[in-house]
Every structure is written in C-alpha cells, then in structure tokens.
Image (cartoon, rainbow, N blue to C red; front, top):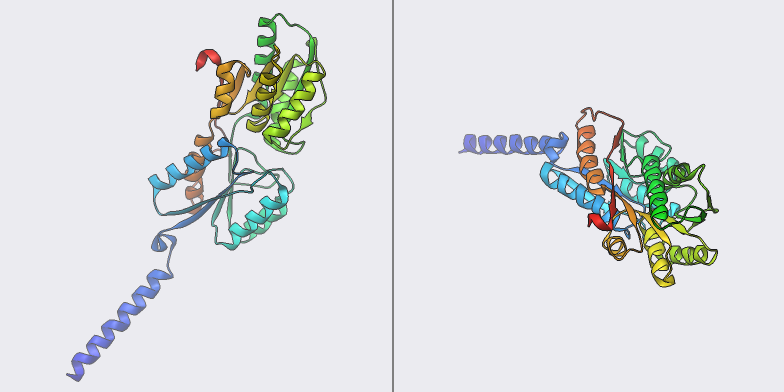
Length: 307
C-alpha cells in the first residue's frame, strides 16, 4: 500500500512539473500572440476596413489575441496614451497608423525597448519598424490632381482657384497626398489657395469647403475620408458646378460620387493593409523575414461611371 502511495505521489509531482513547464514555455505553448491595431481614430470607415483585414488574417492564422484600439478623435496625446496602454496590456506587436510622424516616437521607443514589434499600416512615424504597408500617397495625390484637371476641362474650366481640405500639416500620408496633388497642377493656369486643416472632421471640413466656395473656387480636393465627405456635402448644399475630388471610399463618399458632388475619389485598400500587416506581425514574432520594408497596397480611381 505504502509503495502504491509513493508511486501515485511521484506521478502527481511529475505531472505538476510538466504542466508548469508547459505553462511557462514557448509562445506556441501559450497558444496566443497578443497583437494590437492602433489607428488615428475609430470614426472613419477606412479604419473599420483595416480592422476587418486584421480580423480576417487573425482568424485564418489562429492563435492570436487581437485587439483594435484608437482615440475617439485624431489626437496625438490620446494616441500616445493608447500605445502605452497596449504595452502595459502585454502587446507583443503593434500595427500602427501614426497620427503624426514625430509625436509618438518616444512612446514607440519605450514600446520597442519592452520588446514590442512595430509595423506601420497606412501612415508611418519617424521610428524604425519591421515593415510599412501603405498607399503610395504622393503618387495617389498626383492622380487626384490629374482627375481634377480632367474634370475641370470637361466642364470647360481652364483656370481659377482650387482649395485643399487636409487633416493637418503633420500626418505623413495626407501631407504626401497634398504634395502629389500640387505637383499635378504645377505649371497649370489654376491657383491653389492656402491649405485649410480640419483634423479630418467632416463638419469642420464642410465649413472650410463652404469658405472656399465663397471665395469662388472652381475645385476642391479633400485629402481623406472626413475631408472628402465635408467637401462633397458643401458642394451639394451650394448647388453650384464645383469640381470635388476626394480620397478614400466609404458609403457616404460613394453616395456623393453617385450624385456627382464628388467627381472622383482615390480608393485605397485598407483591408489589404490590415490583412497583410497581421500576417507580417506574426512572421516577425516567429522570427521569420517579412520581406520588403515597404509594401504599396495600391489605389484605384472611383468615378460615377465605375459604380
């Protein structure tokens, strides 16, 4: 009897040790990688689509504890707080769309020092990352400018003032779009007015576009979803033949394109950013090579006749 008891106790000890080793072992043992998506806000449908791409990849890959976090509005301080919270919450990798190139760098350095792997989706910061998955924004902005010239010419307009509604002067992605747009119109007979900023808020963008219309602009460019929606709504309210060209694809923007208040919008592929970004994050966590440091996720032009 005593021998039997000793055998049972020994087996229990071995089982206990094995369980402890399993629990404290490798990532494969725990079965979960903690990966966070942190975007500029949770308002734009663009970010909802990035999240959808992340979710799809996470479900296909399995073994991922995924969470999307973002400020309620575009705000550097709020985004920094969320990055810090993700690190405190045990994030192993962060997919980040930086609100500005420099504001979050200190927070990212602290995250990297804690072992967190950084990958950029849509908009990078001035801090090293394993990969950036984004639209070639300058090229896309240039295409937007060419669409503006084409639409104005079709309306018989060859000169006049053009306004730009942008998020701010710091967000890398939209700054590049504006640069490309201005490049396309350089040397033309059109005058581009000083850019006005709305932080991507549709209501503020509307007010800015109304002001441009009052100043007699023949065309207005919206540099992101909120800017485009505000621009299209202002043109609709004005009831004038003003050419609106925008950026991003949402149900509201597609409605404005269908009605003719936005003649063309540059549609990104946010779902691809999220999907491929998630796969790259897992590769990094497994110690695998992600390949190219920059991945152009593409853009297409949506006009009324393409709907």
